[in-house]
Image (cartoon, rainbow, N blue to C red):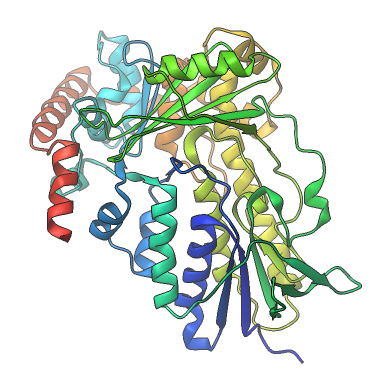
Length: 490
């Protein structure tokens, strides 16, 4: 038999499970591909919030979730980017572009050259989204902003309500749902999955299995149970604080001596996550650091090991692992759900055309391994280049990084350019914002920029500042926009 897969079983938890099941069913229903989804109990606390990256909107559209429904059903919020440190000495990484070309030259080298001639405006002041975020306004793209540059956004979504919403859409698309407190995996003598056995005797066989069970990696195989990698942070505290009076449209990272605290504001409250090193910070100190960052005496607290694994195949035999079942990352920059989305998208692009899927499997593993490496480099750049004080950050600066990241840092320092690599999740604008925010300033710029007259630089930059100021003042307050969406959907 050489037919393509006709039955897919997805096993997992939370939004990753239902996003995978819904997307596969939506894309392949016309090819008579059936999808069963086995939902295991969630391990997330009741207050958990999922940060997303801008590409999630495309996946939502694919499975029929629109923005109004998303915000109304979850009580989530928008994110224009991430604030690192306090506004005075930190920086903002916007999901947006910075400035626009001047006389055919890229904005960054023009800004560098203008700075040599006395410009004192920081790089982030040339992002519509970064400036809007400072005033708690939500920057919505329109024809004028599109001509200026990119203004993307993401979401911060209460995890359980988000998973329930995606589940409803998956079932409406024809996914067959099953609930299971636990399960057994029946394997062939070669290690392939033969069936998933549920309590009560139900047995689900399939041509292809998708593992969305998180770090348990129940289907992909025993190799995933090996010792985790030694990450800089190895414990994760989560808690929650009240909703902020004025809701900022961004996430915040507040560093401490032994870790960092992530604050994710939503309509229902503020999710607090503190990633830290057990070698640098005790659990008690972590609670104090997280409470200080949240400016609230945290009471309901969960502290768990933070498992990081980035090696191993993403597709083995007849099992495709997505999200944390394939690679569990540091939570910095909130790329966890995005990694699951990448797995879903690339699986659909490489869905087997026959029972012999070795070629698709090899390509999937190559693409996903490179995608994980690019995300890991972006995370490592913050640790490596940050001037934060404390034992964790001293260790981070002394650690080696990948040759690709070393090359990127060197190229940027030399001439302000970001070396292009395949399978990036973070744009060149994001890399530039990160490097400059961490005070990695290029020593020079491409010589062609010197041909732009200083007067032209000054006039164009002045025009940008005025346009950004005027456009931001036209935008609605984030909280008011959320209220408008709620009224529109009721």
